[in-house]
Image (cartoon, rainbow, N blue to C red; front, side):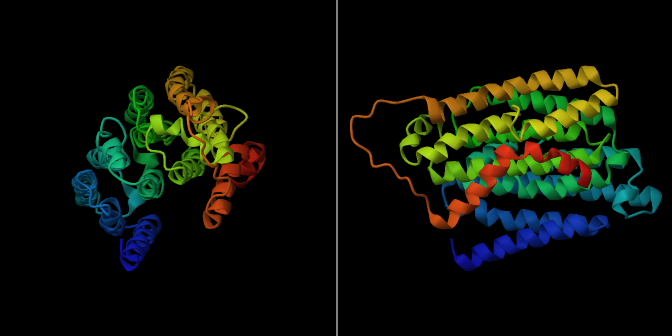
Length: 346
């Protein structure tokens, strides 16, 4: 891809996200989302493979439909209340339409079908952007309107997302699809607490990004796209593959790793809100996700395929990315002891 075109796309992504996050008018928020959609399309289709073109087309159609719904929701609210302010979304129909639009943009159940397919058709680096950076603006809009949304609807969608994210990921062999269903499952955890504690949703999203970034970068470094190649990838960079197991277990939410912190806080908050059955259900559903994380970790580090030829181990990665990956790996595994500091700043 042309470096100038790549720079323009990435700059547009930053611009679109900044416009949406900082705006308090619906039209400006919609404009930022549209800039984001148009900026990521060249990155998705840059390989010119038919699968990438298909993924870009699916992404464009889904995001265009979601943006139209969001615009219709804000216009309906302005028609009835005379307010274009994002925080003044009070009309029930507008709230329902907004929930649908943002759910489509994020890939929440039952509007999740596009996300695994699009992620499968892109490179790992573009998939990383789709799973983390491009979810931030829609989540910001959800946070700003959280007081107006229907908690029962959000709870049902959250539990369904956690269930389907874990269930559908069980029989996958492609790492990108597994990470896509992992993202859907984590979105369920973010959504379920949105109405009761929006700050906790934001903390969960930050920590999810912190854990997902090093996994995508590691898989991209060892050039692994499916489970069969993952079982032989340990010979390339053994230390990196060994830490991949810890990162996956952190993403699964096992203590004492970083991923345990958001789940612990969410279950605690749901119990305070007298939603103990819901907390129990979503905690049990996360065990489904734990199974395929363990399978990934098993394939990456514990299996030992027969090697009939000598293979030179690549103990050094690219020095420009080594420090970047190392920093994120450390944070994704060892951030839990810093939780008291997170409490004081939130």
